Structure formats: structure tokens, C-alpha cells
Amino acid sequence: GDQIGIAGSLIIAGSANNWLNRPQEAEPLLLEALAITRRLGHRAGECRALQNMVTTQNYLEEEDEQEATAQRGLALARELGSAEQTASLLRSLGNIALARG
Image (cartoon, rainbow, N blue to C red):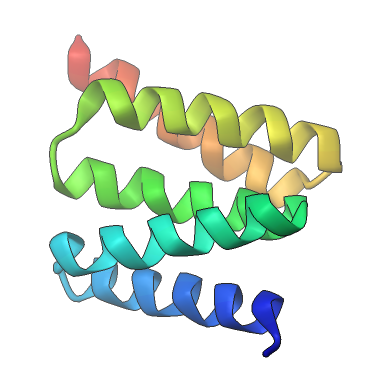
């Protein structure tokens, strides 16, 4: 099937679960999307999945993992030249820093 389409659908479903405050349901969807996008070398999809995973890890209070995910996503967003994703991930890193004090 269309693996990129499947990954995109998983990212959307993961994001929806985050917004519904169901990060436990979002996490496996986003991990699957990450696996697909990485296997296919679809870097834009990987960046989107990482961006959404940062939100999931925030809800799950996985601070160390969240920061590492945001750093990976930020590096990728910069490589891709995505101003929107770069800004979003920088905001996430700022929020992480503020939460830590």
C-alpha cells in the first residue's frame, strides 16, 4: 500500500489523540509513523512525527525524552528549511526549559 499515506494518517491520528488528552493512544501511532518514515527516508514525514511526539511526551511527562525528541526534530526541521516546524520545536524547547526552571 501507500506507506507514506499510512504514515501521514498515523500522524494525524496521533495528533488527534493528543488533542483529546489521550497520549497513551497517540504514542504507539506516532512510533509506527516514525518507523515508516525513517524506513522510507521520508524526512518531512519524520519531522512531522517527531513534532507530534514532543506533544505526546509532554502529556506523559517524559521530560528527558521530550527534549531529545525536540532536538532531533529541530535539527531535521532546519535541514529541511521548514520555518514553521523550526519555530514550533524551538517553542517546545523553550517550554521545556521554563518547566525545569
